[in-house]
Image 1 (cartoon, rainbow, N blue to C red):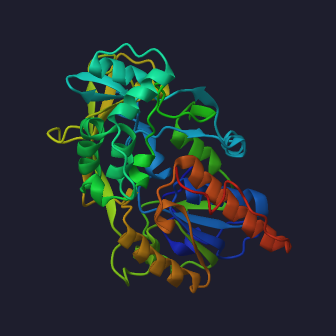
Image 2 (cartoon, rainbow, N blue to C red):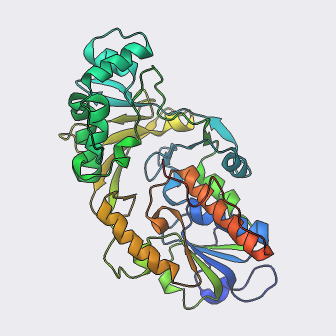
Length: 406
């Protein structure tokens, strides 16, 4: 079992190890989620750097952390994390630390007293309206008859109404979005609802990426293997501000909130948070798919997830999680509004002028990335560091720092 060394809570003890016995570290990395852990592994294994990885939480893995609950069911503490990607390079990298099990995520939405596929597809339309649409062309014609063209698409409401009309917008999107973000879709950037496509076929998979599999033994086991390098020291339950002046290091990689690093100099960057209610049930299965969405505003939670669908675990009991969006709590989702983007730019400009520190990950770059994109971002940063170490030109990277979030 990988030793996280939580006893390494004293800087003088933590600074001792490494490749040569020299005190201190080459890199201090703040945040033991995907961004920080991938970069720590690459720096340690690829460049023989001494790395101190700290996290204020009591575990590695960030929001992807999973564990066996009291019933022995493997669950995700921070809601369902479904791995999917189109990048073979990212798959190849993560496959060093895990085996995989195939899993294609399917989501149903509780609408009009029944559960129908989301994203909206031909099956959804047939069930909702009692139709017998048999082809993509028939479904496309039906949606076109419902659509209400919007000349200038700026908001999330515009995106959906333009594509499927106001009735389907009200049924599937308005209430869910208002709960998730605490704002009406008319107040949110178009990117929010643009993430959820509308289909004319009967494909009921939530994602269509070429690679859709889950770590066979869970995310935490994968992170343990990733960080099991003698050049990496891990300190948990640790706020880096408490040790930054006590530990010797050359470079800082900060994967926490960029506004927090600068003590909120220009004000706080707005985030949406989540509250999770985990329940253990004395039955083998609760719902037919991994996640069921509840778009109605009258229902206080947005979705219920059942993890045995994701993990393939066989167990006489099951565990589920209710998700309740919240205004306060850990930062999960940057709120996509123009004024927030402008505020982030001010912090980004400040970061560009701050030597010795690099910002990485969702919180460090104030952008909603999927897990594979965070891995790609970390690998791209490593390639830049590696090239600089060797005096080589830095090549553009299609999985890299400038990639658009999906």
